[in-house]
Length: 248
Length: 176
Image (cartoon, rainbow over all chains, first blue to last red; front, side):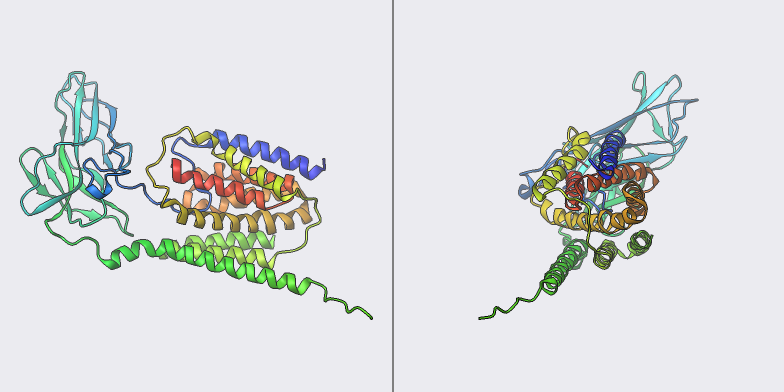
C-alpha cells in the first residue's frame, strides 16, 4: 500500500468516526448549502384530497422552574415545528408555592366554531401553562411570541380565542413565501390561522414565486451538465489521433 | 493555492448573492464550480481503483455517513417530491466534489503531498458551508470533508466521493 493510500485510509476512518460522534439528533445535514423543503402540513382534519398520506399534527410541552413566582424565559414547540412560542423572563406568573410550570401546545380536535364570515385554515392549537405541583393557573402577564405554520391556500391573519370568542391579532407573515406567520400572543387559549370565507387561494404569481427558485436551479444544473458533457465529448474527439491511411 | 482561493471565492459570492434568492446564488455557485473544475482539469498519474469497486466503496461510505441518523423519526416528506430535489442535490454535490476532491486535491497533492491535500480539502469544505450553516456545523462538515478526502486518496477517484456525498445529502429528505 502506498503512503498516499495509508494516509487516505487513516483520514477516511478518522473522518467517519468524527462525523458519527458529531451528528446531531436533529437529523442529517445537507452538505451543499441547499434548503430542504418543509414537510407537508400535518392536518388534524385534512381536506378530502389530502387525507391520504396525511400525518397527524404533533404536540409540544416543556417544564420550566419557578423562582419567586416568576417563570424564566424559554420556548416550547410542537414536535413537527408547526407551532413555536417564545417568552421572556417574567412573562408568565405562577401562584405561590409553585415549583415549576408545565407549558403545553396541543392540536385541538374539537375547536370552537369559527366566527361568521371567517374560515379557520389548518389546525387550531390550544396553548396553556399550569403550575406544578397541583396544576394551578399560570397567568400571562405580558404578551409572548407565537409562530404558527399556515397551510397552503388563503390566509389573512391569526385569531385568538380565550373562551370568550375569536378575535383577530396583528399578524406578521414570514418573507420569501415561507409558510409561517407570527403574532404577539396575549394569553393562553386557542390560536388558529384564518381567512375570510370564500377568499381566493394563492395567486398564480405567488405559486410561481414559490416554485421558480426550485425549478430554476434544476434548469440551470441541467444546462451546466449538458455544456460539460458536450465540452468533454469535443475534447476527447480533438485528443483522438487522426486515422492513418493504409497503403495499398 | 489558486484553486483554493477560487473555490472559497465562489462560496463567498454565493453567500453575498443569497439575499437575491436561492436560485441565483446556487446557480452562480454551480457555474463557478463547473468553471473551476473545467479550467483546472488535468491528467493524473496516481493509481486508481476500478469503477465498480470505487462505486461500491462510495455507496458504503455514504451509508456509514447516514448510519447515525437512520434510527431517527422519518419525515413526512413524500417520495414523489423527492426526485427533483434529489437531482439538484446530486448535481451540486458532484460539482463540489469535482472542484474540491478533483482540482483542489490534485493541485495540493502535487505541491505538498496527499495528506496536505486531504486536510486542505476538509478545511475548504467546512469553510464553504459556513455562510449557510454557521460555526456550529463546521466540525461536522470538516469531519465529513476529511472522510471524503480520505476516500479520494484511497480510491484515486472523485466519483466515489460524489456518490457518498450525495447519499449523505439525500438522507436529509427522509430524516431531517
